[in-house]
Amino acid sequence: MKWQVWDHLYDSKLRHINIMKIVVIGGTGLIGSNVSEKLRALGHQVIVASPSAGVNALTGEGLADAMEHAEVVVDLSNSASPEENTAINFFRTAGKNLAAAEKAAGIKHHLVLSIVGIDRALYIGYLRAKKEQEDIIKESGIPYTIIRATQFHEHITTIIAVQSDEEAIHVSTVDYQPIAVEDVVVLVTRLALEAPKNATVEIAGPDLAPMNEFVSRYLSVKGGEKPVKANDDSKYMFFEIPKSLLVPQGDFYPGKIRFGDWVNG
Image (cartoon, rainbow, N blue to C red; front, side):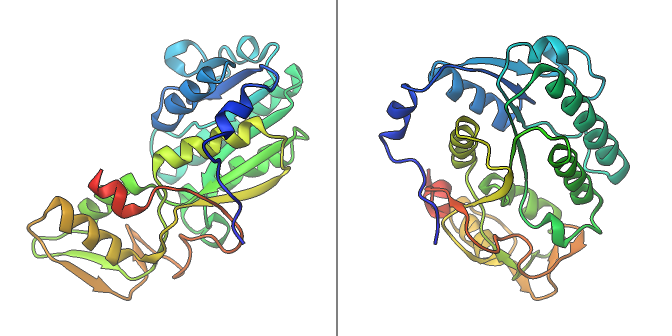
């Protein structure tokens, strides 16, 4: 079965919970800025933690002050590049810095946004780096929730750009179940305000189909000069992957926004 996403009354229910100080690491990014805005709208004190705000998880600068009197840390940070060494150095160093600062401050809940399928593709350097990020918080003793998300709807343009040549857009028939950024924000906010799961949960969009069908659907609305050429090589971006790597393997929290509605929105 699938867990139910917030109904229209959930926000009003949240207004009756205790107000908390919440630190959002990576709070100026796409997900982070929207999660911060939603948490503030619910009455919480939000610390937007980013290098531009004087809080740097990679160097440790400003972490102690940011964590003071905080109860929850939402880690939405990302490395400057998906390149293997850069990503591993970032997530390893930042993860250890965050864990140390959070233990010192007595943080009650650490939530981190990760990626569906990483356990099954550790030969990909970026996914191995994300797995190390997960493991650091699991082993820290801090109560935690790990959210593994499928690819975002908004990622479709990157697939088109990377997998195109002069004649066609080459897209695999691997299973695909993208989720809208708006749904990610809602679910991250929800889970940050709930009790720690001390487990890994998954989130995904409501539509499951071969990846090539999503690309074709997008181009049928947005237009494009090149045809989509479907193939069964299980290739995604630069890597060969298991056919079902990019979709949940069991229960998951579903988003509400259908891919077609997002494309036409």
